[in-house]
Length: 184
Ligand SMILES: [Zn+2]
Image (cartoon, rainbow, N blue to C red; front, side, top):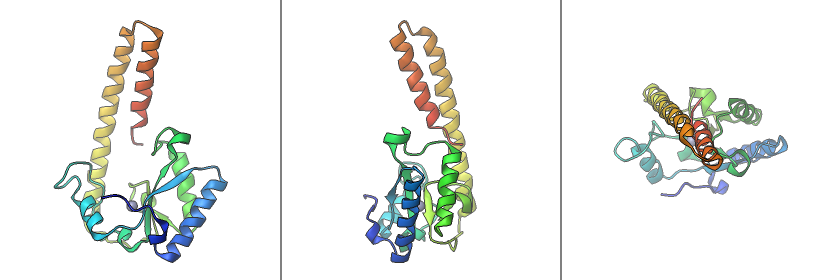
């Protein structure tokens, strides 16, 4: 099921804040866009099942997500500007969290220490299973970081076997991209 990227399906008061938030980011030369807003029950169920009964990484702990009420959005950075959707530059994220706060929007990361791309109307959320979710997320991130480190050290070793400058550049580029996938 496709993510809903139509701002018109957001709660109207929240939408006004979101427009202000995006506008303020643009003024500060930060390029972000909305990857998801309102969620139907079916979409929430699909996401809830991910990593539990279906393939993928666990992405939510609750069926009562604030996305269901149209009072939450997920964002990503412009890949053409930053090279990736989710840069691991915490300073950049902090700027966005502060801009959101100045527009009356809470960030998931400030509220529960993970879910950097999640922003919502208020902290009045369902905390059921939250601690379990935080642990799972931290565990998944740690595994991902370990895999990235292993891949990067393999590529370092491989670099020594490259016979041309072109091959060396290719390996170096792969290593750079792998390290971008690490979580801070
Ligand atoms: Zn979200």
